[in-house]
Image 1 (cartoon, rainbow, N blue to C red):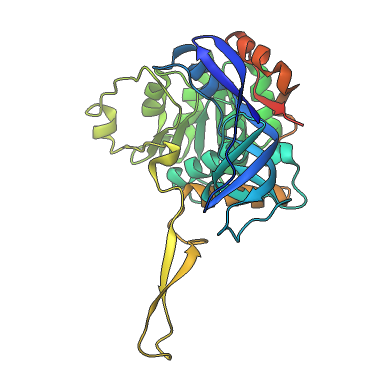
Image 2: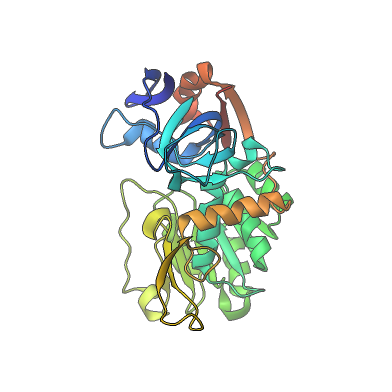
Length: 342
């Protein structure tokens, strides 16, 4: 038996009990320790999704309790992250799991989807060391992306938000400049002073549809604009205005636009003629990154102390109190919220 969070109607969250079947071939059973609430995404699901009921969440950290008959990559007792909703337990395809490094806390590991989104977004920015970067929005994903951008060598690293406290935190985490949304004149002046007359790339994580216009106005000629927020209502953009005239690239950043993972088929050495194909398992460490590989990269950053998350978690609740926490979400300014399942 497992318990799971369900949005059963707009603005309503409940804990629902359900039976779990044992894992079959290729599956693992995982008991949750914690799951991470992504406030922006889940606020949208709670208030204006196109159908209900819906099961929110995509970042769980827990431990394996059982494995299917052909599973060799995981064993009972392994600490893992899984791409799963908010639930006390789940049975899931092993390809949606990664082992958690020994020195990484489950509360930090639960950020893996957010962290992988940040890594992917910075990849799309195609930065060189010293490239000026503008990040619009310092919510949960924005604050993690700011840290990844600093690691990637963005300079100066400029951020915006409507909340001054988030800008102050972003400066602590590596941003060079922070502007409130009402400081558009100061932001524009700094952008014009940059090499090339603007940031080399602008990442929009604000969740505000019209902010893409700011990105298009400030990014320098030949630069990249990366809309990385989920905007359920959409927004119309004039691609034949400045984007066309100045040669801007608008690069969509939906997390699963690329494969989740890839299997590698290799060939044997030519010294062992004739060459023969063989399966080499999951493709890793190549120039063809996948969602799962970016999650693995984020775990390595955590393992080596490159990312700080403690200041980003603003609320932690036990599972019994999770429905009430979700009901507060539309009026809450929480960044990261953790649900404790044990």
